[in-house]
Length: 131
Image (cartoon, rainbow, N blue to C red; front, side, top):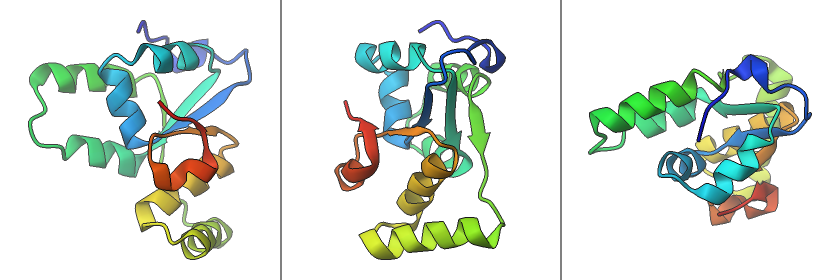
């Protein structure tokens, strides 16, 4: 996929938030996912997702180089310290019995008004697109 600068794709109004497995699929060349994201005006993920990806065993230098180019072109969100935002995460975790990282990802996609892209079956209720 030919990645644009994050400032270059703000016209469509389409916003996507990527889970770790979506990033992996994208970097492995999932054409359907590439076509979907090519229409986006905003693509984001969470710093926790970046950490999760970077912790995988067996990443090659090429994997890391591609990943670096990718993250330069998306928005990376950190965990909010706002109590209202933290309550949203806690409520999602409690109401859906999610692991904490999954609850954070879902909450961040909602708070950023972005459609969640994930292949995690547990997140199906909140996922806009699965692959």
